[in-house]
Image (cartoon, rainbow, N blue to C red; front, side, top):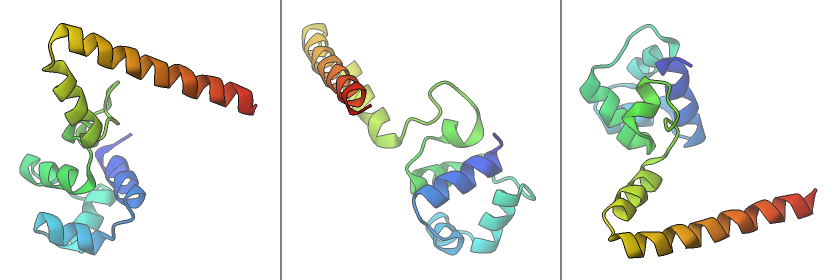
Length: 111
């Protein structure tokens, strides 16, 4: 998926108009439209502003990757977990594992 496609997808997911996104990042809706059509490519600074405005990572917008679709909130939480001591981190992971297992069981039961 190209930058233009990821930008369009992320903007539509957030239900933001091109003109509104343009205002937030300091450009126009017409320029956002050109980015979405692949006619222009933003500078890295503008791409970073777009990513922040859409609540996605710059990685998501500019490249395909295994973790490209991690949103900023999740990324912040992962970074916070990474800073915990190993004992606390293992408790957090145990709780996360329990929630994941419960969600999977719920999905299986709903089938």
